[in-house]
Image 1 (cartoon, rainbow, N blue to C red):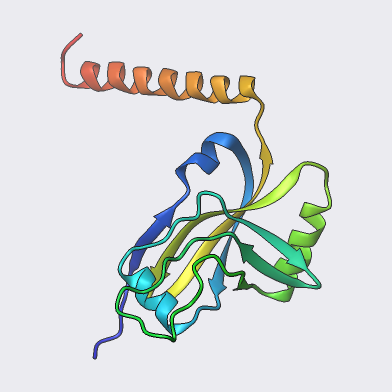
Image 2: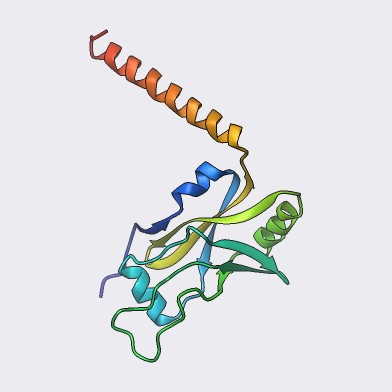
Length: 158
């Protein structure tokens, strides 16, 4: 069987970038059981309510929902179990330093397969206030409007 190449997105937390300011992102491997991998390959996962913690020098993904595999037997996994994330020691130490600051948290942004291996992208984040959210929406709308005007001008329209 040929080895997989490229990336395949499984789950994405779109609301995280709206609710949090992401300071730094890390790519981590994830420790999974066999039926979890099969369920992820079917594209079934949700990381909307999940978060990550650093406990005793290890990083753990909590509250991520990977539903039971449809064709599984008694060997199926529990859907919301805590899963270990695989990072280098330097990255874990840097994460611990960053998370010691007040108001910072570790949020999973997406789960994907990269060259056949399941990966999780986690970000060190701080929560946004309501006015921050409105400001970022206004900036995005202004950027879209300027792109629209520039595109029309390039095409010869006004």
